Length: 259
Ligand SMILES: Nc1ncnc2c1ncn2[C@@H]1O[C@H](COP(=O)(O)OP(=O)(O)OP(=O)(O)O)[C@@H](O)[C@H]1O
Image (cartoon, rainbow, N blue to C red; front, side, top):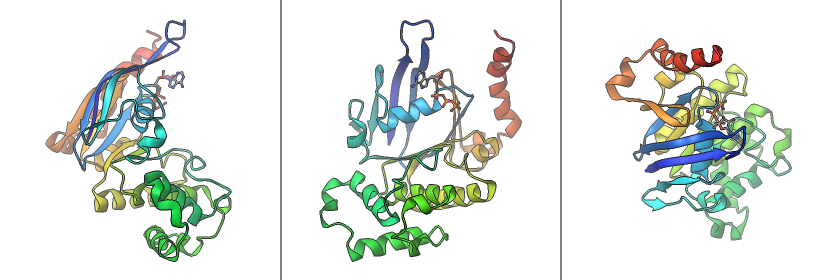
């Protein structure tokens, strides 16, 4: 379960270019919720993801994960609870290390004590199995340095690394946006399989409104650092792409007119 309460974060406070990125944002996800997060550029989506992962501290407000207050917990400590896949395929993996070493790193992030025995045969077997679900043949390349993989392969590896520890919260920040359409589909399908099979509590940021309607059980739209709209159940099932775009238009029109 994730609970964000009255989250506020201001950049360049008191300066001429002050930016209120989160403006009293509150949000609760139940265990197993798969929330699709949408909103215009600058709405605060990435800032919210950064705040949940611990990469960014809040000025005010609180964040609880499964009942525990993680508001002041630094990013490395929060990594036991939260896993994240970024938009940039280069971000989630260590290029100079092999696939197996990267998988081990991911395991260490979740539970540092378990690293002591290193890359055991049993571990390699587990990694092989987890990678095989992708259908990319990465399971046969455990000793290949990640720098030799394509962007799509790296992003797929990031995804497997993120989900294999069954995190309390999975954050997907436009994680297919930088991939070609075929690879994006492949990574998205692997994501959906993993999130469903492992019942992961997930937030996925996307600018693709069709995906917002098709996937997940909730839509959360941010605007100006707050939740503008929440749809689930029947309301989500009935919503259309134009409905969603309609909620963007007020602000976008205002911006275009320079108001
Ligand atoms: N590190 C930072 N320093 C200064 N301002 C920031 C920083 N990060 C975000 N902001 C500002 O905070 C606001 C929210 O940005 P954020 O990146 O969270 O939006 P977003 O919804 O993720 O947008 P996009 O869809 O473009 O990725 C914006 O006005 C942005 O310029």
